[in-house]
Image (cartoon, rainbow over all chains, first blue to last red; front, side, top):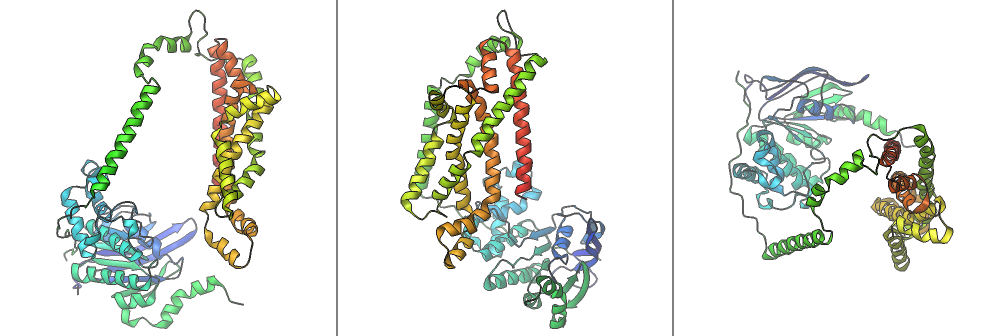
Length: 255
Length: 282
């Protein structure tokens, strides 16, 4: 377990995001320590994905601070320590698995060091092989990414994040598009990255049971505000129902 | 308080050799050889020579700035006695392109439905429709124009007929492909509910492809207005005919005016159709 004296790998304070008059996030706080998995739950439109996008720099935020290992990050700044994993996986399907993983290193390579997917330097390719081995897919290195199953593709996406050498993994509904077995495997992988490699994982999830089983802490969002922050064992069914109440309201009644 | 962020790189592993069969190498070599060979033949057949462009520079010079018997293209003649009548001819060219496209809608629609796998179950009908569309498409509007001129004489009317004929083939193909790309799910759902193939076409396929159809239609108006211009060269009237006349009388400054007007018209149509397509596909 991480000691309380170290500054968190990811620290968010008072994060606020508005689209015009619509407040998507308000005063959002989050700490994720190295080696910790934090799940973020909430109904559709509660601001979960926006929060991850603001932290990763893909979307600008209006107020608040985001820090990585004690260093503050500007709004919209893309830092190599943060890696994103997406619900729709977003590999390049026509490239090989290895080439997709190598792409994680692009941020530290100049254009001429890797001017095409076939032209990654040997040391990057070897490191990418190590990352692939970490997610158990070294044997598929030269297959086209599009030929892998959804769960395998998501593990390749995680390997791409490892090749980025990110200390913080931001996962936006990483298992929503996967069948239960594949989802379980991806969640175990994220858990072991935290336990064995000391990576900080913040995952937006839609499945409370997966969150209970694989995370240390669970944060609940309702309409852009934190309404729940608890150890996983303390999460009650009533709290889960309250979090998803807006979804039931939005779906309407069966008459 | 020290920051503890794991950013140590993964341990390196050797990259396994990518196994490529001898067959793959042979195929690649053969494809490369054929592609290069075809291009060598093409260069010879077209007498492609950048040198001729350089040695012929004085021709380009007299086109641009004139000589003893020609009036150069620069500056263009922007007087109203040239621009005024040309405006009317631009309208003729635009009308040819527009009518040629709209009047081909029923024929294109029929062929598209008969020639799309989603809606056409009979293999013979399907193949016939595809062949028909290929034939109409393979003959350029220009050639259709030459044929219709012998039938109905000179003027914009044979031009409109030529565009209708050619565009039926092109738009039919584009529309049938749009239908084939739609999600088969709703068709299957209605089929399982007992709908006939005509019914699934009108109740599932057509409602799904309306945006694509409209967008492709607007794109074809754009292309057909430019086709109408070239049809003017063979006597279908419009601004294309005026351009030919100006060239034949070596009045390149007048020709330049017409070309500029065509440019403005084409850009205006392009912007309008892009704007409309943007609104439709939203």
